[in-house]
Length: 137
Length: 458
Image (cartoon, rainbow over all chains, first blue to last red; front, side):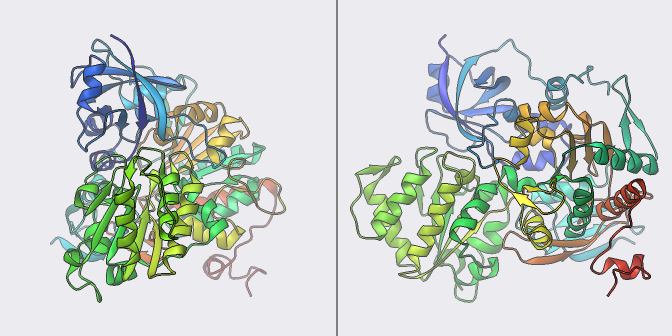
């Protein structure tokens, strides 16, 4: 199946905020943030079954998240990963000389990855800096 | 007998609700119930009960594990590490009080650090626009009492500021808005049909990243000129109708958020929004406000602007005067250029909320986290120092999103032995002074209590 190209935004949601205040290692945070909301038309175009895992790749990295139908309507061509650890694996750090990274409006390619495993927040962040020891620390 | 504490401030979002009621256990160590708060605020207060909250600093060992150490050792290590660094970066302050923000400035000056806050990845571009174009703003009370047209541009308060619409912007009955929501016309500008957009009378679902063109079209129509049939995906008729609504308002209030500052255009979008506000004031009263994210993220802007003349991205490495130039002295840019050699993350979580590349760059050097809880930054830190939670077990002054200061209460007794941010920073500063054999300089009200014999006391 061909990869699809979408415009990605990463913004807040109340589910993310509520889970974050329970702690970022809380399972609710994992459920709230390791998802990508996309229009059903785009899912169809990319051969993606809803609630299955996908690989999102940007100019600076990739992440496995679960594709879901939008909780708030998202038009075709636009995708949304809630602000947080998973989103920030693909957010480009370029700041247009303002200090603020490109959290919204960057191109991504999305492909089905139903066999891939979702990583936890700790695994992603500790893994990125070479500290991941299987959750033992 | 449990105690109900009223008039409590909520230390979560920029709405800084100060009508929260918290029921605490008779020994004031547990939160039992939280009234009036949104789900996020409720979770925040209950999270303070977490029995696993850290009570001692933890230092990373050579094998990668973390080991608890006494506060004295942590303070000593932090002071030595920051003094040894050529250019430390101190970032965070989304979740601390102004007392802590003020105290950290002494450490920053002493170590020649760059002092930055969460605005750098949030409303930083708004600051840039405000420097250039002014800030014709008001308080949330004025918005509540006067605004009959409310515009949410690139913001989604139903999710990010859950009680904003009920306390200030859509639903409350004010002095000139006695019919509440019935009297208000709400416009939403957002590429998604968000839960805020669903509340709006008109939702302008623009093409993502085209805010600048749309602001431009609004201003062009307002000045009586024609525009193309479609701008940023919005039909001319809808734009003209929206402008007419804003123009005929008795008081128009524009709230803007991350949709403007995180997208292409950044500060230029906000610049245009401010100009639109100014243009509208030719016809009616119009005001604009940034939807600040945290309960006291307006605080560092106030405190540091008073101390150094700049609200964020403050480079103190010259040792003589402060220097600010976002893009150069901003946290993410400094990290990406490997220009800092020590990172101190305070009351924020750079590990989770920075793009991952700057985190990887920062991790090449000593990485210190000061936070009441475990978070992503603490779990990759070389040193994690727990402190009390501002607004829960530590009182303090906070600045709401409209720059109104509010005195927040503590509802719980702090964990024994755990200092507040201010106490910790003062100790680190004292240790830095000992190490450099210099005399601490205490200004303002502090020295009356701490150093009554100090020559600095006037």
